[in-house]
Amino acid sequence: MRPADKSAVRHLDLFAGMSEEAFEALFETAYLQRFPQGVQLIGEGDPADFLHVVLDGQVELFATWNGRDTAITVLRPVSTFILAAVLRDAVYLMSARTLEASRILMIPAEKIRSVMLEDAALAQAMIRELATCYRQTVMNLKNQKLRTSTERLANYLLRLHQQQQQESVTLPFDKRTLASLLGMTPENLSRAFGTLKPYGVEVNGRDIHLTRLDELEGFAKADPLIDVPTN
Image (tube, rainbow, N blue to C red; front, side, top):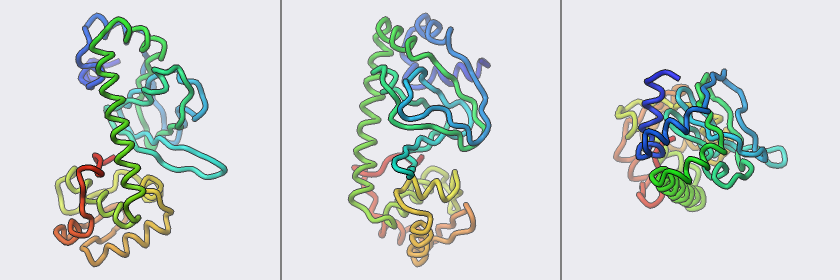
């Protein structure tokens, strides 16, 4: 692993507080692998053999049932998945696939559990990480249950605007993935974009022009008890 990659992982909240000795012990059995776009990395129901760290690219976490699938979240560097399954030595509840060429660091789950028992800072960071994930899950659930699909899209676009800091924002992935992420069909997403047109939302492929931010904000009614950081 390149020094820059190791430094990026070291500065993740999950690993930043642990001792240098414990950090080196954790990574002595880890390995880095490159994956092309469209590769399934893990499958729901499979045993959690590794904690994965996204160093480059994009990874979609998704779930399937009865011939249907839905996007749960999209991860970008530098982030990890799936800690809960690793700590419980349980099966994955989600699958993961690359949305673009990606570099993934894979840390053996057994090593994570053993080092956690020896390093209190790592154990505390894992508790904080799981608590954060739980709160984000609750916020996502409120977003899905309390808002219409058009309201969800409006708030997503506003979060994207806050992240990119420009009037014209670019969707980080295709519209089909966005529709699934927001809990709607591609057809419903298209209609939702049409509904937002009077609020200054103009669509040109993956480029979205937001020309009436005040009106869009008035429609969206963003709420810090619901809205989570942009994926």
